[in-house]
Length: 193
Image (tube, rainbow, N blue to C red; front, side, top):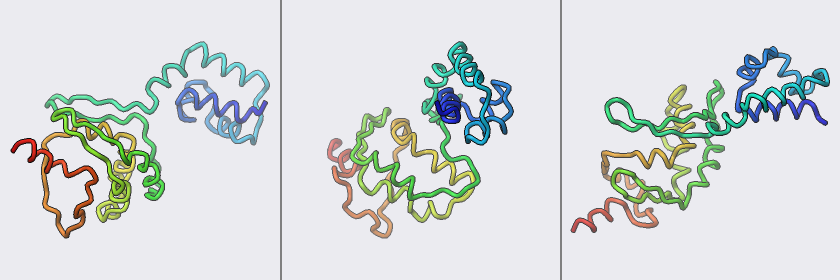
């Protein structure tokens, strides 16, 4: 049995970071890092004891329910807010937008519905490129950059809660006639005529 791999998988099954797992179990963070990296080997009984503790406390079952969970809540003013519980980008390192573009590719061809108006929104093939390589994305830094990068996990939920529809002219003819299934505003005009 690969002890380093087992301890790492055990910690990841709880959904805890090393620091959280360390505080919960009483194992120093540095020791836990060394065990997971294979630089040190824990006593033989430690992995079994940790596995028993996690199973006994039911931590993994509770954490799996909340992992990757996105909640839609309403604030006191009645505005809907999307809460993302799984933050992917939080370090000081810069964001690799090419990787994010690859993640966004799985949204292409999907339809999402705005809950308030029941309008269908189609995600076209230009979405990943526009999201990751726009002039606005290149200009943002720091917390705003991290916030935009973390939104990729909640695209559907953000569309679902959207309201206060606004239409803007196609400045600079950037978009032209790219809407595969028609422009939403054109469809609405057709319905209302």
